[in-house]
Image: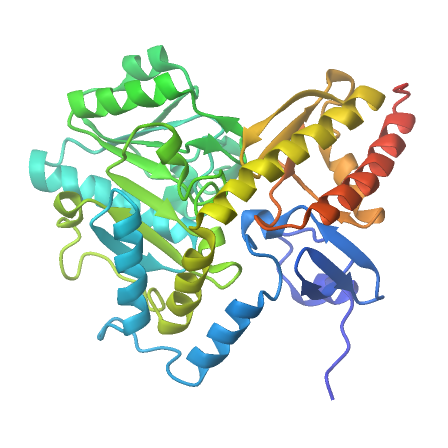
Length: 408
């Protein structure tokens, strides 16, 4: 008999690095989730931009079952057909020539940063090892990735962290020009900052970053862990910037919830990860790659990608309508279905209050820092679910606005 567990069980047996909600979801279908008590929720969070095709997508369920009857794991002593098919599709659809598979966005970024230093070492010598990233950026939770990430709170208490890393403000080309030098091996950026507040890159800024990297023989690394696989309305967000990186990292939506990540690179750059320089026990396993291949096939279609942009407009319209009534947001921004609504100064630090109120009303949303409410739903969320979700969101916003004496 299955042992019964509750939210209290978490506090008894889990490391306390998370503070999960009081509810325990047990079932999902499309953009709906049900908890242990049978309460239904609409999902505007997507598992933090992961379940891009919703919960229990029938095609993915069938692919998983079929692969489960064949091969789960081999290790990289051997290759496998799903990994080769997925890598071929990713290279055909992007700037890249080579793929390294792993299990998460953090691991993909770890591989990318190691590759950047190794490439510089191979071509220019050990002195060319410095990495420049951006304030408010987020690249993962390994010691290397929190060091490249531009949020000091994630490094606190874990020092000493890797050296040779500096930061400047996002979309500020003058600050970048002041930092970059012949010792720079890579500039790392998100095409749209996710955890940092849903801040898109200016096209001109991205173009100048590319030019500076070329000038100083530095690699341009795009972290598309959150923005990739259709999230912004193109397969990868860099396509909208008219800039090609040398290295790109992807995860989250790639497996629709099944753990899988990848680092993509040009052939010339990829050569520096020669045999024995890097690895991953589970990376590229047949189960993950079979599922990811199906995800790619479904998402990278004109209907789905154009639908992302249509749904973007519905979300912006819904947020704008709520804001006209309650005046809680000072900015609504984003790309595709990665959208942020920054709260007004009188609600500074209260984005989580809106999240909590929304959960009580039967709606999953996210935050991006203390001041931005974030939305990253399924890319194929039905319009009826969007409409009902905004009914629930309005009730939540009305409650928070009343608690803070904000009038209509």
